[in-house]
Length: 265
Image (tube, one colour):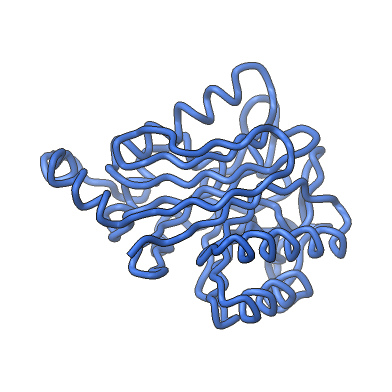
């Protein structure tokens, strides 16, 4: 059975109420096109290209996720969404991807491990990193096992390999990939590499708008780009077949032939 995944490439505003409407509308649009799962980008709950931080954070039971849980339940779709969450006792916030099940319950969350302290940016000034030893977030949707990374994590191959070791057949990467010279090419090369080396689907959903470069894409288990969006807001629904992963791994047993393992430090 294939799983229909909706890539919701939205331009999220800074205003939290407006961001919630944008996200809900995108989930509805993907559901109308038959999606079983919708992926929203990083910072879908509010985005400031100058730096999203504690002032934009919400609780897990805050208005953004409450609305997302409602639309997921009403439309019977799973959702992954990047959300900035408050951290008790911390001045910084948490950059998280939250899984909302099709029944409206929360299925777990991943806290971004590799913060974007590069290219002149300092995400760690505003956000606290996730625990690299925390259990990986891998969930089953319609018989397909999906693991989750966030944006800058894409540059660290061991992060994706850890998800595959935990059973992932597809890797989902919500992002707000910063714009700049060569950045779209880097995003594309890294996405293709993570899919190819792990013999897995790769679903990378980028934020559209000022300061970021959109270009959401789906890469198949042999590294071929099967869908790509442009720079602006858009959505598309793509069928992911677990059988293609099994077939590719039979023909290329690279995961079985490797001689090193991944351990958090």
